[in-house]
Amino acid sequence: MGAIAQYIDTDPRIDLARFANALYRLGGVLEMLTDMHFGLDANTVGAMTQDSQGNACLRRLLNSGTVAYSPKGRLILSQEGRELAFDMFGVGACD
Image (cartoon, rainbow, N blue to C red):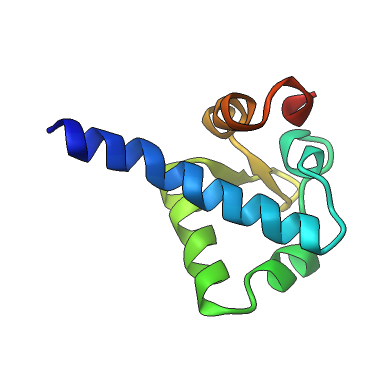
């Protein structure tokens, strides 16, 4: 059972790291995801998910509840996602 719990905890971390890397390659910063007033627009999300790996990563992040769409239709980190980003990347990631 411990291995399953570790996998469940590790998988969103891997996907969030991949997603953050893709965002960085596009010239974005992690704070775009962590601030509910910003978020990623459809064009940015589309650019990050052009390939099957990026698309699968986004689906897993959505299914795990790590990311969600804001009322404005922008992709943001959920509260759980913010906690995970804080744990992974430190204080500056969620300011």
